[in-house]
Length: 307
Ligand code: GDP
Image 1: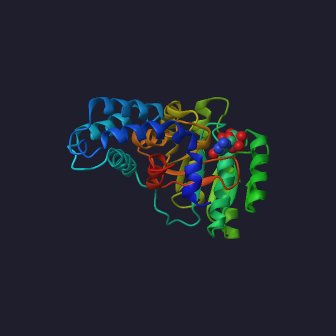
Image 2: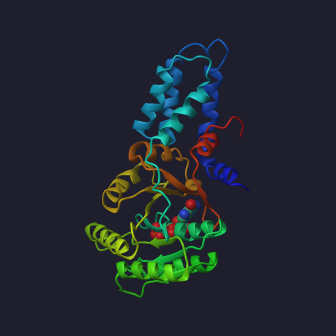
Image 3: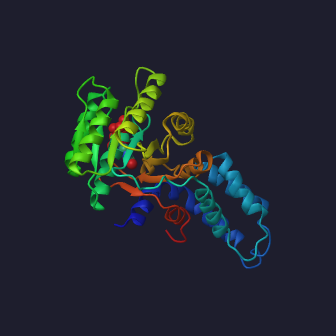
C-alpha cells in the first residue's frame, strides 16, 4: 500500500464520522441553482458542528466557516471551498528547518505515552528505507524500560544505537551519540528524550541542557526538534505542546495514533494554533506505520469524493 492509501486507512474512524454528513451538506449546497448563491445559514452551521466534532478546534473552524460563509461563489463547490481553506491553514505554518547540516541531529520530545519511542523506531526504519543511515540515541536515562524498548526497535530496523547506562547524564549520551554517529558515518542522529522526570521544571531543564551540549558536539544542533502528540488526546494536547514549544524549540510535530480516533481533524487545529508543520503521522503500532505528512493528501483523504 502506498502512503496515501495508508493515510486513508488511518483516518477511517474520522471519515466514518465525517464523510456521510459532509456528503449530505455537499448535496444540498452544490445543486446547480445553489452554486451561484451564498451558502445557506443552516448548511454553514451544520458544517461548523461537523468540523468541531472532528476536533478541528474552535479557531480553525471559525476560519474555515468564515471563508465558506463570506465567499460569493462563482460556481465553486462547498467541498472545494472547505478543502482549499484547510490547505491554506497548513500553508500558514512555519516551514521545517533546512536540511544542510551533516550529521543532522533530531530530538524527539513529548510526554510519556504519546508514542515517542515507537516513533523513533519507525522513523529510523523509514529513513533507512529511503537510503539514509540513521543512528538512534536512547537519552531517556530516567526509564530503563524506554532504553530497552528502543533497543528492540533499533534491532528491528537494523540501525545503530547509542544507549545510556542507568543513571548516566542524558546530555552526555547525546554528545557520545553525535561523536559515534560521525565516526561511523551515520546520519541522521535521532534522539529519544525523557517525557517525564521528577517534575516538569526538571524535564524542561534537561531538554535545555541536551540542546546546549548537542550544539557543542555539532554546529547548529539540534537541527530539528520533533514534538510527538497523541491524536487521541486531541485538543487537550495543545497546551502541552505550547509548553514544549516554548522551552525545547520545537520545529515540527509528529501526530501519532491517528488510527485510534475519530478526531483526526486535530491536525488542522495543531497547524492553525501552533503554526508548526506536521511532519509525520502515526497510523498504527507496526514499524511501517509512520507516514510523511502531506497536507494535500490529508485533505483529499478527509473530504474525498468517494469512499
Ligand atoms: P512513549 O512513552 O512516548 O515513548 O510511548 P511509546 O512509544 O512507548 O508508545 C506508547 C503506546 O502507543 C505503545 O503501546 C505504542 O504501540 C502505541 N503507539 C505509538 N504510536 C502509535 C500509532 O501511531 N498508532 C497506534 N494505534 N498506537 C501507537
